[in-house]
Image 1 (cartoon, rainbow, N blue to C red):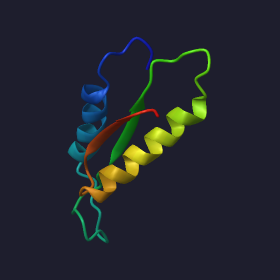
Image 2 (cartoon, rainbow, N blue to C red):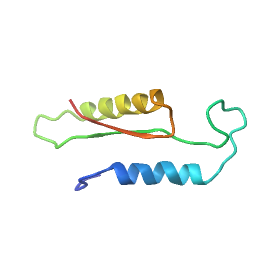
Image 3 (cartoon, rainbow, N blue to C red):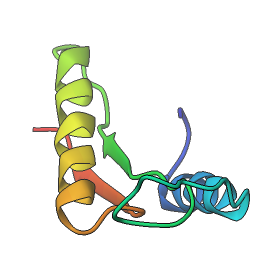
Length: 79
């Protein structure tokens, strides 16, 4: 999201909207309803910025969210 200072509220809103749907998740050992974990990454792009850095950061954040208990939002900065 360009021109966004803080993506946390957007990510939290998406996570909560899915949880609020209360879609039954019969086979889950984690929750009775469908939930999502969100990982996002931030970067201030420069000429040398490789877009794959952003994707790798978001992937890392997603796995951290799942490791921390799922149904949460985690942010990392691109390296």
